[in-house]
Structure formats: C-alpha cells, structure tokens
Image 1: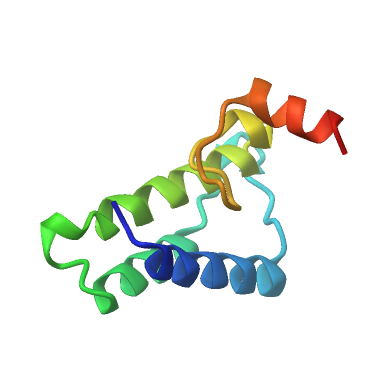
Image 2 (image 1 turned 45 degrees about the horizontal axis):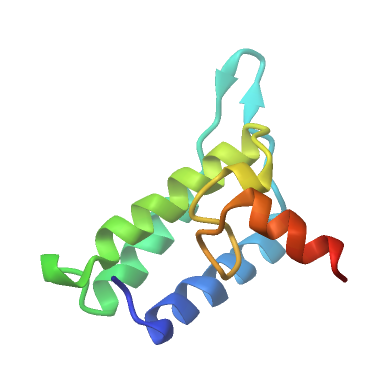
Amino acid sequence: MPSNAENDCFNEYLTRHRASNGLLPFWHIDVPVLDYGLLQGLLELALSNGGEKSQTGLFAHALDLWIASEFERAGFVNEGVWPRAEAPRVIDPEILSAVQSKR
C-alpha cells in the first residue's frame, strides 16, 4: 500500500494534470479517446518513487488511478469509481452521502 507521501505525489500530479488539460472528452464519434498522457505521467511518477520494486504497490496504484480517471471521463459517477480522485481514495458511497448530509 502506498504511503501518504506517495499518495500526495499522485494527488499533486492529478491536480496539475487536470488543471492544465481539463477533463478531456472521452468519446470521439464512437471511439474512446484514452488519456495516455495521464497514464505515462502516473507511471513515470511511480517509477521515480521506487515503483520498480513490486512490493511498493506504486505501479499498480498508478494503473488504478488512471483506470478510475478514464471511468470518470466516460461518465461514471465519481462516488462509484474507486480509487476516487481525492482522499479518501476508497469510501462507501452511503458513508460519503451520510457525511455530506451532516454538513
């Protein structure tokens, strides 16, 4: 499981990527257009933080984040996609709904 510092690196990268690229459209005509730039950046970040060692889980975490991002771009509801773009990465939608209703 990646540490909080490693998750922070992913958080910062995702925030910068989305700020500079926006949320790119997923479909072009009837063909999905995948954000390979995001995938490349996440994998490079994982490798630069020691992800070449399989025990860190960073490489798998980077793939999880990219796949979740692609599901969001395809139109899946944010709370239904895990890992989520922001912390906590995994949370039951019912718990999230209860917490948000208390605010």
